Length: 88
Image 1: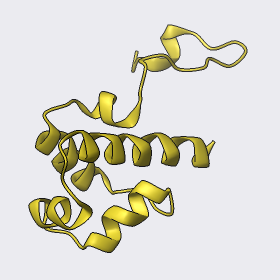
Image 2: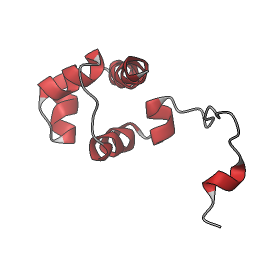
Image 3: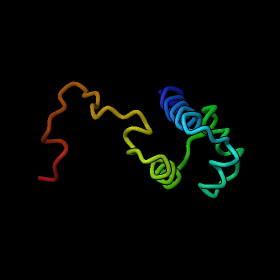
Image 4: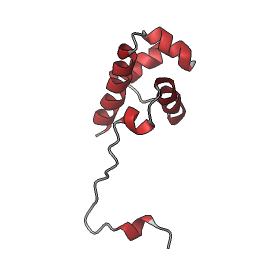
């Protein structure tokens, strides 16, 4: 599952960057990170931390859900209920 998530985020970063015709160096400079980090994210070698994800989403004007490919649905295990998500 980890590889699947990494590829979605990396693919989305690459797609957004290419749509705007910017290179990795330019994106890295805008985010104040190294170009090698952008490359690693795009290749799925590593994931950006939450703070970098927020900066990437803000830079491209999209939500974190869009950047991460989150659909708003979670798999539910046997016996799971909405009550398990509340404090009371």
